[in-house]
Length: 107
Image 1 (tube, rainbow, N blue to C red):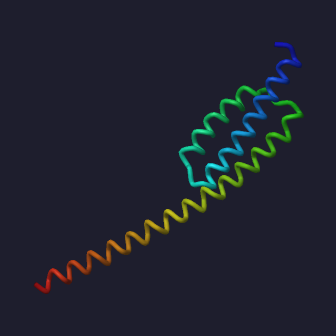
Image 2: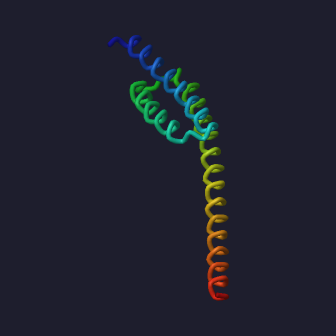
């Protein structure tokens, strides 16, 4: 492939990777973590096809990094919600256990 042909193919791969990056963020907003992970695998392949990166790629990569930052914020928030729910469930289970122990002793 000629130099300009490789540059065009590389730019197309980066454009596709950027679109997939946006899709990952949308999937995360919907709480579709499996979908986001599947899109990330596809994006990784596009990023590999886009190498070597030239100066023109800087903007694409900066936007993808911003998408990744926003995605990580969503992941952290979801992780915190799950941790809180698990802690609350553990407290309820412990309270139920105590109740059953006390109620069982009254018979």
